[in-house]
Length: 233
Image (cartoon, rainbow, N blue to C red; front, side, top):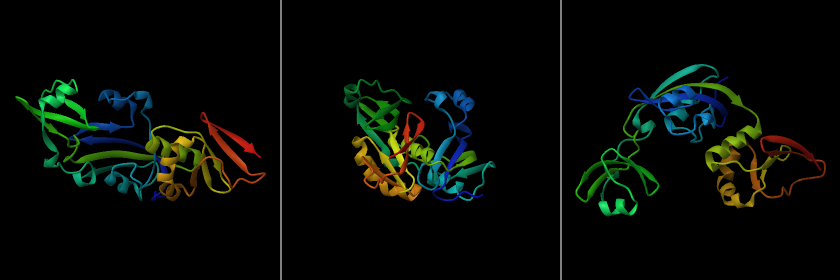
């Protein structure tokens, strides 16, 4: 079975730049490189193929591959984190760093204006800062294996929530009318913004609030706290 666009898959991978691991779904490798996240959260990813949930070149390479086969790909910078952009190297005054209570030293990585940046040099009151992605301009290698194809609707929706919402909200699934209904109205703008894309990816319409199309006898699955509860009107 070959993988195609919009398929949901579970994938294991390790990404390297200059033969050094920068990202992995392997817990042991994550510990070795001191990956800056809780290793208990390290696990294979569930993604929708061809929808920007992975690097462009990696995403494209998955299409046509088969389940449970090991693959290795090399990506040029244009397919990965892009080329280095000289315009992203800025001169910033010492005053800006003092206002943020940062002591700038060469090699220090800082967060400024929601960007991760690296201090290149400090000369008097002038600080040279590089806002390029640390992996920009580098060739990237990925070793990966697609472990399974995801067919469960709940798993697909939670994978989308994890990636696009960064948290999970309660929802019900109306299989008959092909609808996903979220309960929390505060996420209405998010759902509306992504509804068309999500429908293309899943075949389901995403809405917030009461499912107006419900009819007596319709069966829903309520997803709450990781459990599915059958509901019949």
